[in-house]
Amino acid sequence: MESSIINLTKPVLYETGYDEWPYAYSGSCYPVRWKKNLYIISAHHCYKNHNVKPEKTLYPIPDSAPLQFYGFNSKLTAQIENKKYKDQVILVVSKKLHTQKIVDLTKAIDLSDNMNIVSLSESKIKNIFLRGYLLDNPSHKIDYDNKKIKPQAFIATGIRSLRKSSFDFCHFLKVKTPFPENMSPNGMSGSPVYGINQQGTLGLSGTIIEFNSYTNEFLVIDSLVLRDLLKGENA
Image 1 (spheres, rainbow, N blue to C red):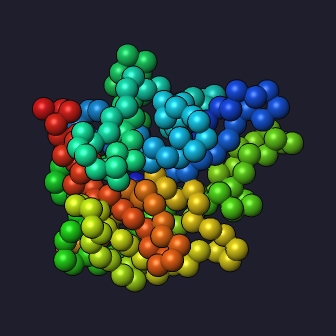
Image 2 (cartoon, rainbow, N blue to C red):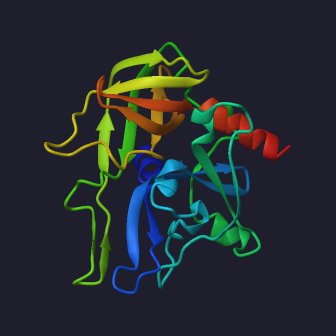
């Protein structure tokens, strides 16, 4: 279950509008559920930096042949005065475009179940997992010569340090796994952080939105923010 959930993290893939270079990458994204509804989560600046609308995200529908992508009917952000929270973007998978059977193909973690939340506010977390897509990775590319899209993920585990930031429900996280040599953390924004609590349960801990190159820490929005937003939307 752990690997299947973690592997659902995908690169933010989008169409450029140029015939010669039709596709490009920008950051990472991942799915979550609220019961029967499916959402794709990322960081808004991944799109803003490339002048791309979040709704243009090409998140693949599992087992679709030929490969197809989910469509979205809206996007959400936390309705509070905190710019850090507002960098977390939530895309709503459209049920007008897709049947429930298609929506259910993505076996994402269900945040309506509190057991699937492992908050970074908890004092004891045994381990964490990150999966994202480093833009500097030469294996993470779109091979135009051979007409192939080749994503290559970076996976990190282990907590070296964890501390609260000055923003409510935001945390600075330093992981044990080092970045590959000569690669920056660019591309990790929008990645999920999954935690394992003392009972051995895997749950969503938060979303990466920033990296501090001076302290080598990720800034992570706690999963409680996302849970409460989706709870309100599904009330």
